Image (cartoon, rainbow over all chains, first blue to last red; front, side):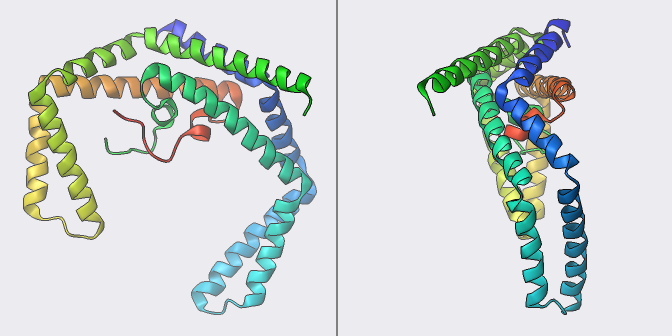
Length: 123
Length: 134
């Protein structure tokens, strides 16, 4: 790959990183990952999902189990730190989508689909 | 939201979109993209190759759909393989496919560079559910 192209990718990434919405996303992600209360809830949620899958395969899953899972899910999703991360992620995604549109229009194909591309579309 | 905030937000959006356009121009100036464009143009102007390509895609879509309900017949599979061999032997199509693979590889490398810089996978974050191939 040409060095100029590599440099231009780094330059573009630098501009993206300095954007207000991306900075907000980074801060929200850091807060989410560093919140011990949320971490404990997420660990408990994962444990419960495993437990309930086992019960489901045994045919012993009860309504109370599902209600407990939903309650835990609501605690995680309704937490202020999670809500802030979700909002920041949506805003960041919208801005990056606009960038993808600009790049894709210039190139004549969807840039993100080609650049991510671990998943084959069969074309 | 105040007008001042709106204006500031607009200015910021323009800056990032300009940066995106500059990045796109750099890709479009690169050897891999130029070869891909030339191969694509050549394919568009080669009626025989286009017909073969279309027939292959039609048959491939059929075989894939049939495969989902376990109904692929041996003759369909053999026909697809015959078309695949014809495609490989066709210089226009082979050039197009090679240039497409090289360009996709370059896009993935560029995305890896940006992901390292950003700490998240930019392309995966915005990739649509369907593909954007020609």
